[in-house]
Length: 227
Image (cartoon, rainbow, N blue to C red; front, side, top):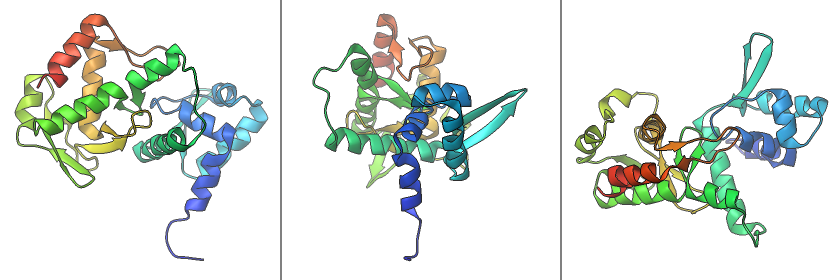
């Protein structure tokens, strides 16, 4: 056996259709019960429990108990980023839908990717940040540019306050629908938090879609796309 990470084990966990549906149902950063994930996967509860045990043992899910309920969630941002990247490959080389429905259009425009904004709006935002040197790119790595702290302070985001040693300020995350990068990391999460706190957009229950109101769309563009 070759040295290094065992990608075959992870691939086998993600590769089962029922388990893949369970994992993508958790991409909004929330937590669901076994019964809820069974519905997402289209399988019975005993089968779902078996799948969830494998995903938990494999390190892709975490389990938390609250009273009589047990909730499953993704094991971290790294797992979410892996799933988003796989979805990008699947979108590029897999079968295409000839008539995308309204939900598909909404998902492409703006959605949650674990704890940050994804979709066309998020990609356009990162493009603007890079153009104005608010964020800078060095190969595949992103970091805050010289203009970044003052820019974000002006829109109500304290970059010093969100910085932690354990989490990068900026990280590129491949966007599966646009097939280019959007902004993740502590800064990406802070921007999504602001969008929701300002009520520029809402998150419909049970969906990853981020629905902007007409005034919210204008406010978002003024804050982040007109830099």
